[in-house]
Structures are given as structure tokens and as C-alpha cells.
Image (tube, rainbow, N blue to C red; front, top):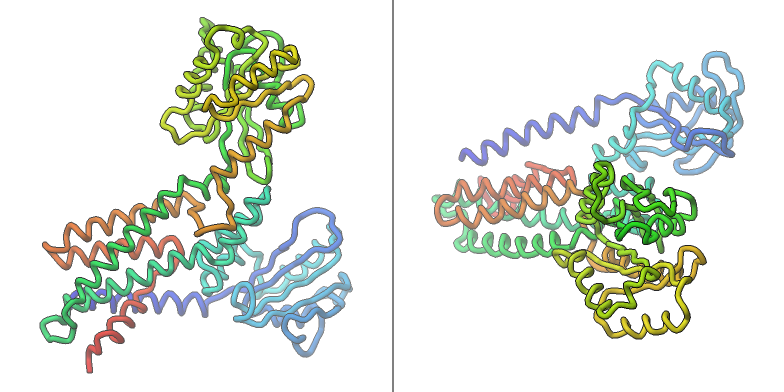
Length: 490
């Protein structure tokens, strides 16, 4: 009976925590739109005193209909001075973003107006300024959002590309959280069954075959977790940006290519070999995908200690890259030698390394070649089996459009379409908890024939890890399953 007793104790603690969250509440206020001059600014309140604050600022005797826009004179509650004429929207809890009574004041966006309304709200004793993220935190605590939806909302606010926006919207809509909650429910039911078997099997209240059903659930869930974890970090790359690294010999045109793509002089360009000593980064949007494009020091042997450190950093960054762009100067005579194809094949093999990285070869300075030479190079690599080979000139801009199309296709292959297929992992935090969950399920199988109590503990750990992702771990639900499935206590 020890496992059930522990569930009951935890249930009591959960109930007390929920009561505190719902009853001990301040009313908060904050500017919800951006700072600075604008046409309209939105100021929001949330909490039990939102209604009183609305009456004091508008002198309305009755609340307006929920979710309807009303024009109001917004007054200073102490002096009665007119602060602005704006729009007011009232949201009755729990039908609001936070799940509490909320009010929005849409006022003119001048700094003096915004400051005046904020000071008026701050003069009320029952209100206080909101802490960073507190409105969203209350939405989570009141069950309006789970943690994955909260993170999706944060990603949406910070999205800079179309693909990031699509992924964030999908996560904010709850698709990713629904996957984890479905797994959590399966684990919760399995845990409830094994807990019931431990506590009540001697009373013949638990059917035979319950443990075999639990084994099937665990095995199926392990396979689903393995498939989910084996996504090649698509969602995380899309959220954080794909690491694209320019590498090659000195004076191949890496810095020039960085400047052309970023459309500004990000890196210093010079005819002197070894100008770039450190890694130079630029955050870009290429075809709707976020890219961290890195220019690196030219690869060559040098006795200069600073340049040697630059080469070391360049090689380290290449090792971390998702996409490697090998920039080669076609005007240095390399491609007129006897075995240029073998040289590029060796280069590709050395850069690809473990086989999971994508490589694009950029043959730069084609403006210095004759048309006959360019045609010969294209024919040479047409059926070579090499990764995409792009002929371009950073000086004239020739071939840059084709290079960006090839790079965009590589980015799409790495990140995928965020609107297609199952939702992917977007946070390192998720991957950590999912891996811990998978490991716990593996240990369950090891303990299964030896000790049911240890097996149940591993299921509890696995369930807790999934709950840590969504922020929803409820002992009450486990108890509900125990009592509903097994008719215990009749």
C-alpha cells in the first residue's frame, strides 16, 4: 500500500498548490505592445481587481460586454484628469488569455499618454507592475497553455523567417504538446495498472494479463520515442538557425561571398592573404530559413601565431557546421591540372566527415576564365557524383542567384517543411527530457522480471520526464485511473 499512500500524499500537496495559485493573486498591469512612439499602444491588466481598476479609470457603473470594443474616456483615478480617449476591451475569466479577469486599454501610442495611463494604474493599491513573462506564466498556471505552447508563443514573438513563424505557430497551437500528452496518458495508465497490481493483486481485484498489457505499451512507446528523437535536430536547427560555414584556402573569396550574400561589408576584404583571422558571423534569412553564416580564416600553414589560432578556429567551426561551403579560386590553375575531379572528391570526403553534414562547392572568380573553360568545367562535374558545384563570381555577381537556390534547397532538406509531417523537437530541453524518458523505459524492461516496485519507479520517472516538458504532472489523474479501472474500495 506504500505506493498508493505516496500518491495520496502528493495529491494533497498538489491540491494545496492549486488552491494557492487560484486564490492568492495580485492584479498586475503592463504595456503589452512595443515601447516607443506608435499609433496605438495596448496596456493590459490581469487579476481579481481588474474590474475595480476599470471602474476607477472610466467611471463606468457596469462592466461592458465581454470581448466587445468600447470607446472610453480614460481618467486619472485620483484627480479625475482626462488622460486619453481610447478603446477598452473586457475579458471575463476564465475566458481570457490568462484565465483571469483581464482588461485591455488601447490608447494613443505617444510616450506621454502611455506613461500617464501606466502611472494611473500604478497609483491603485490593489495593482502592481507585472514581472517579465508574468501574463504568460499565469496562462500556464491556469491551464490555458502548457509549457510547449508557452515556448511556441515565445518563438513566434522572436521569429525572423517564414519557416520559423510556421513552426512556432504550429507549436503554439498545441500539436507538439498533444503528442507528449498522449504519451504521458499512456504512461500514466500503465503506471496506474502496475501500481494497482502491486497493491491489490492479492485481493483478486486486478485482472490477469495487466502486466503484459503494460509491457506492450512500454515497447510501443519506446519505438515512438526513438523515431521522434531521430529527427536529425530539424526543429532545433530551424529555431536556432542553421550553421553554414565558408571554408577554403586564403584569398579564395570567402569574405567577398559573405559580403555579397549579406549585402553589406560584414567582413574585411583585402588582396593580402590571411586577412581574416577570426570567425566573422552574419545572421541571415535565406529562402525563409534562418542561417548563421560564418566566414573563417583561410586554411594554410603559417608560422604567425595569430593566424595559426585563426586556422584552428576555422577547423573547429567547420566541425560544428550543418552546411559547409567550400570556396575555391578557379583562377589559380587548380582546375587545369591533370586530376581536378579527384582533388574535389578528396576535399568533399574530408569535409563531409561523419556523413551527416551537407557540402556545397563554390567555384569562385569565374569572371577570370574564358567561356570555353567554363563550359569544360560544367561538363566535367555534370556526372561526377559530387555535391552541388556552383560556378560564381563575387566580383560580377554571376552565379550568385543559382548558389543561393542550391543553398536554399540544402536548408530545406535539413530543416524540412514545418507544416508537414509530425511536429518535431524544437528545444534542447525537450530532447533532454525525452532521452531521460526513453532511458527510464529501457530500465523498466530490465527490472520487469526482477522487481515490480523498481519497474513502477522507472515508469514514474519516465512519466515525470514527459510531464516536465509540458509542465503537467498530476497525481490526481493516476488515482482516477486506479479507482475507475479496477473498482477498488467497493
